[in-house]
Length: 260
Image (tube, rainbow, N blue to C red; front, side):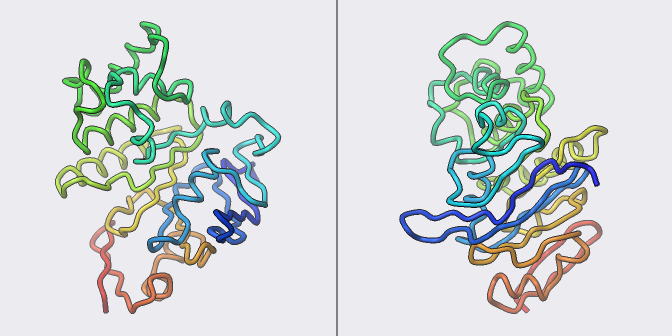
């Protein structure tokens, strides 16, 4: 079996004495694309914060490629993990130029002090053009709409030579049209040759891309179900994690969910 892109074993996390994650074990193998699904407070964002090193686990092991958290410099490891999350918006200065926000992804830093080299700025500009936002080249972070911010954060993630791309509720705050355009663009990225493994965190089954191969369902800080999408994503499991009788529907390659 090939080495996993990402692996956690018996991972626990407590905040202020309160257990948030309770023995999470999970691995992402090369070629797999995952969706993490669960209700509010189940531990989705906490798990992502541990993987990216913005929080530290109380116990358990975390590995990205050959690197083990606690043994290796996670500032270096973070360069191999693309991250798109609204959490970053709390750290970015409103006056930060958009090209600098994108360029900061190359070194996994925020709010650059030094001016990025011309070659890096050109690469950032090309990414803006790819996502249809070339008009933002001279803009500052604080002036962007929610949809524009999400696209800029994707560009920032793409600046790194990452092995896994984590999307933490990437469609939050987007209107229906912007959401569909965003999801179509992510689907195109996922199916490209040599695409990194995707890990998409969401509340909504409607956002699960056709390219997603596996699902991790969380409930109360624990793994409720994990495995291939066709085996895990069904009405019974979803009813159990959300605590109400749910009916999963499928329309082509996309899903819907309603109260039964």
